[in-house]
Length: 134
Image (cartoon, rainbow, N blue to C red; front, side):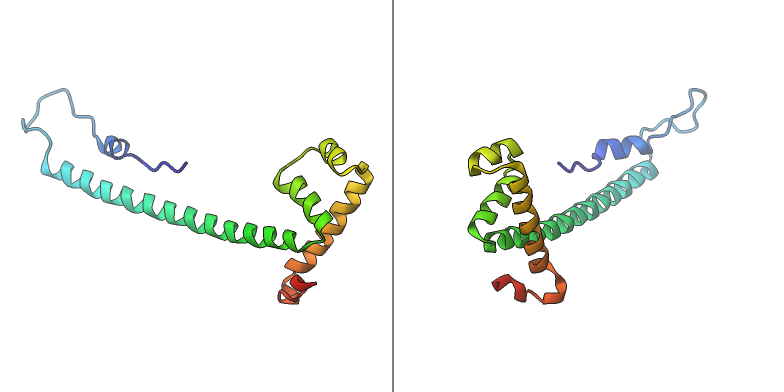
C-alpha cells in the first residue's frame, strides 16, 4: 500500500506565488524553476526508492521470522500443532476451538502454554537450533 510522493505534489510544493504588480520578466517559467523542479523530482524519486527499500527489508525480515515460526509449529506434537495453528494462524475463536477439539477452555490453555514453552525452546538462540529435532 506504499504510495510515495507524486511528482505533481512535489512540483506544487516548489511553486512560488508571483506578485500581481509590475513584472520585469514577461516570459513563462524560468530556467531556474525548471531546474529546481527536475532536481526535486530526482530527490523525490530517491526518497521514495529508499522508503520502498526499507519496507522491503522489513517485510523480508518479518517473513523469514514467520516462516521459521510456522516451521517450528509443524514440529510440535500433532495435536498441539493443530490447536496452535487454528488458534494463532487461523485465528479461530476459543468457543470454536473447544467445539472442534472437544476440550474445555482450561484444557486449551494447557495446550497453548505447553506449545508456547516448546516453541520458545525451539526458537531460543542458546540452543543453536538443536531443539528443533526434539
